[in-house]
Picture 1 (cartoon, rainbow, N blue to C red):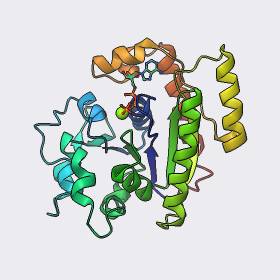
Picture 2: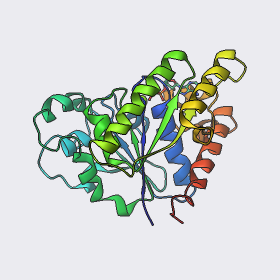
Picture 3: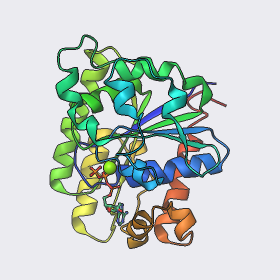
Length: 263
Ligand SMILES: Nc1ncnc2c1ncn2[C@@H]1O[C@H](COP(=O)(O)OP(=O)(O)OP(=O)(O)O)[C@@H](O)[C@H]1O
Ligand SMILES: [Mg+2]
């Protein structure tokens, strides 16, 4: 059984990476999968969502990744209050990772090595990436077997996808993670009625192929309200359109397990 390690990534901010990381993780855990969510974003939104104070919960991913002192994962990984779902918290200090890792040999492949120590304990490891293409994102991509890209359907967002694709290709070719594949693009804040939505969807299909477009997540203020209450959408309002969309997305991701030769 091969662990699926999935970066939830997009260098654009506010496209739903964290909302997807949280609700997909929780959905997979509810279906009996053993899930670890790694928060690689210095903003620590996933960490905060699970009621962990990123300024008062050392050690975090910062100590694990940047400080060279061999901290056991057991000290980093925490319970979330949701069965089968663990989290490796972030801290604001991670913002300095680029600076501290600049001259370090193997700076792009550190996370991959660290994840090897724990991957067998999980069916899924999801990585909530920061909105940048810096060292944290490159480490996440190199450590991953798959990438999921949430994106809004705007012109600039589509241009951003092309840049992201280049970084993914670089990770595969220059760094040598040839197993990395794009498992899909999630249209977020989705409103199928606008002309622009249809245009960008067609552009994405041309560039990435139709089968790479995953369940769209509609714009739904319940998702934002759930975040403000530090809850998953299912525990906050399970009939909300956002909850139903994330349920469907979870089923879709589970449906990919067979083609991954997992179960
Ligand atoms: N489908 C949606 N409908 C309405 N609000 C949403 C939706 N998805 C996310 N939000 C809200 O939009 C904001 C941005 O979402 P989120 O934090 O998930 O994006 P992000 O890509 O992780 O942002 P960042 O790049 O800053 O890490 C949050 O306040 C979130 O609650
Ligand atoms: Mg985020």
